[in-house]
Image (cartoon, rainbow, N blue to C red):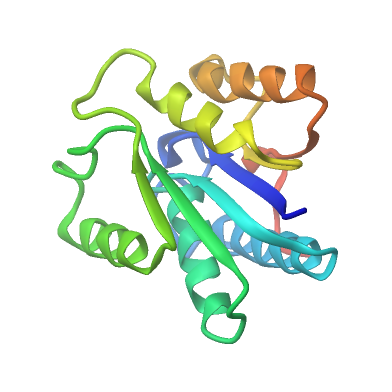
Length: 172
């Protein structure tokens, strides 16, 4: 049986470093994601379902793309909340996003256009078949309610959950 890990996260707007990927908190988050993905892979996880956004989802998809170059069994399934999601992103983020999607094993569009709750639905689709969930969000931030609700559902489904709280992440 294939082991699956879902990766979900809140918008980088709610990260202490925002969109500054050169910040030590962002570097630490990416390192933790690499370590957790590698650990899960060593435990037999071959399928990673990523709820795509311009933060943790993009970071995870890029990490998985790099690992797929040397691991032919690795699958990255990307769940896009809605088709036009990246329209208003910066050109650099859009390029990275579309390159990440092109490198995925499969891309699933959850909705054609933005609807209420489509990000939450993408989280749920990623979580549905997962054994483990990596959730990058601040549980105390009311703006991360979709991630908190998705983690609650994962708990009700008895998924193993690893919460990475961006406000608590620092390089050591």
